[in-house]
Image (cartoon, rainbow, N blue to C red; front, side, top):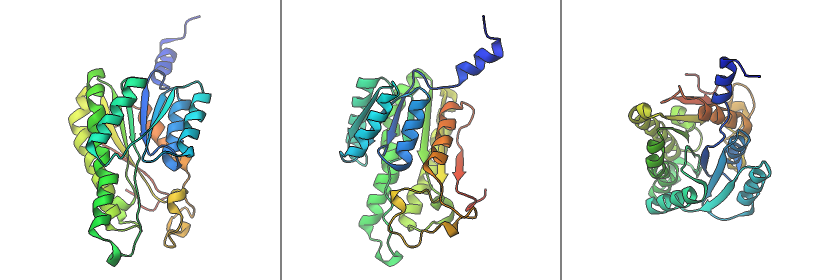
Length: 255
């Protein structure tokens, strides 16, 4: 029995079967949950971490247990040459990247007077420059396919300043600028570019900062990684949203 046209169309639009996703910083926290969500939707997944560790291999094992392909690579994405090389390596094993999640980042929290130029340079390099380098590396394949999804992780700090420091806020505000720049140039090629701006999500990155409390959030609690991952999955599957920043912040910043 044939499905009615509307049903066939819905089936075609759902799921990410046949797509290859690349998730930076995918071994823990938000990145891990996004990688698993993409795999559950049918995508094969490449993870990129900075240093080798059991967490990354555990995510690969979870994805492979779903029947999907998964590999993990290690590189310093703040170096343009390493970013280009690792993307090429992932594509050679899995195929051209069609979904990119720029999630890798650091949040060195210090009192304002202790933030050094080295802190600034490293935060901008890891949080912002790496997103540019990896995006540039995956774009030729996306443009050739005339299909792509680029999802970047910004932060409520880009809008409110946050509790980490101006170096972190600036790096995450730059992500929103990247999204606007890429989205405006790539829309006609079938490539969407969006960002997610979480607030305080319950991950290891929250630990050790006494200024980070759930009372800062109007909803009165930290967010969860699956609440961010569900938005990332929506952006991966939706072809009509581009140039947007989706706030997942418990009401801390209301646009």
